[in-house]
Image (cartoon, rainbow, N blue to C red):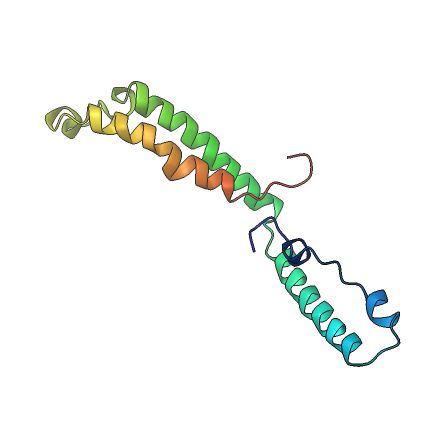
Length: 121
């Protein structure tokens, strides 16, 4: 089951209590009731695990901050790191520029993917 998929969507089977009650009972109805109870329990756990608004905002803020930082690191890292002795001594311009490009895959993409957009997002 993926993050944006409920148990019902995963199995493509819509189970309702009417399916159980319409047949008059019996073993088949009890099996359906057990399936419904199991799926409702899984759905309740999934609903509780969805992030709250403040946590989504933290992830979004992290992505925006990382975007600005990676832009500076990839284009002109001397602006941030030029004041340090080790920057010029070890010739760190190229490694920091490469890290600026990789920053997208290390921080920005994971923080945006973990947000679980909802509604208008």
